[in-house]
Image (tube, rainbow, N blue to C red; front, side, top):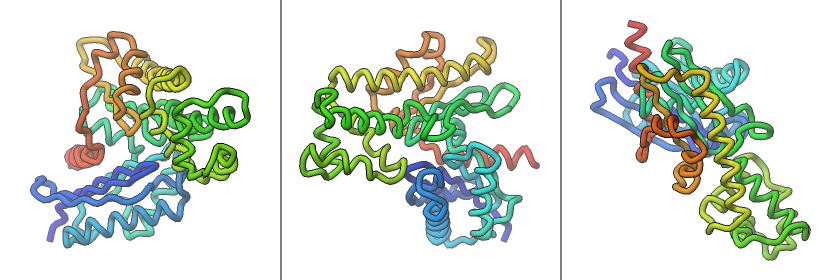
Length: 308
């Protein structure tokens, strides 16, 4: 039987989503596993989650790898050739051949899920990045170079800010903010005195990003508002940089997509919009129901067509 299935994988720092679909779109199968960013959870767990998801959708479809004509893996942390080599090694070990694989940064899937070039997508989830495609078809990116020194405004950045200010309060340097009670609950600490030890023993960037909702879901108060405003400024700066380099006002259309878990929060998304100039705000397309894994399917179809 001729291969007629397309696989799209949206691999993030928290979850990995799999979509196996027939080329005509008549049959679809989905699965979700844990994080597949080896920079978040390590190579062993990342490879395990990638394998589990693949096996699940193949089982649901009653299919094999040989039934897949093309696969697009959008992977968080794919920032350089060395990262691609790491992911490719994982996938080849699962039985893939390189001819049917396209590996890209996961942010590119979000863009293709909602738009066509030229344009860009701002993703703020566990990490943050701008990825886009210019009018010539060239892919570009800004940010997302690593949780420890980049990915500003992301869930990891927000979580780190929440924990940093909580430690300052525990040390008596600054007063406790109301939302720090939620930090204590998430830490499972019996009292405030136990919080510093719990914070300093957290393992993994995904564990830090898990504290972002404390700020995103908190009532307005000066410290929380300042942190969110600063994060939004960081995200808007990446969008402005991408547009300055790759957007030419009319006649060419240009689309800006806002996506990722952090930007599902209305307050945070609104702050990002307000931090952009009016002419860029007008380029933002509403994506309330954005499903990034769909973008991999569209990108695969486009690539197959271009290859003939």
